[in-house]
Image (cartoon, rainbow, N blue to C red; front, side, top):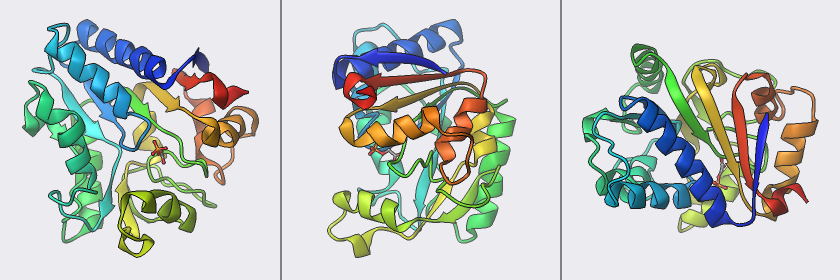
Length: 239
Ligand code: PGA
């Protein structure tokens, strides 16, 4: 795993944005895999700035997000569709038809998961995937488990994820109990992966990812098997 250590959250966000911009310049019709959460917000601000200054265009780009709560309506301000529109898509020249997020309103979530996985395949895989890391080692919503799923699937959220994400909801009871998420195999379809981490509260998770043997009880360890992963993190994560 390549490691880029940054002095601040802003520097981490800028370095990641520069790598995304380089990917888009090299291949204007890139498929970019995106993540939600606090970690990539600064990256999205940087990409919006780069677009507004005329440095990059998203006209040919397709995006595919890692996950979405289930059930949830896109208009719900805690949905990942809402997050992406609000933080990124609404500020770019991207065609919204080319932005993919699992449908949190699908009547049949298993069918929606299959449709989503087929979409990734039809797109020819992902050129560059952005990831965050959960304190319990999850990537996307691939939670610690005895077995990990390869393809996009519906999953139950763990207690620790519900607690961690309850900061965005009025109460922990309002956090959806399930999510649609890309599987480990879907993520591995990405030719390049950037995993971002910032702040001392990610220290244990990043250390475990780098030092533990590959372990389904800590899903991020599996990234050590991928041939092209870059960790971009703030210095306090590695102290
Ligand atoms: P965060 O979430 O960016 O809000 O810390 C990361 C994750 O849970 O994958």
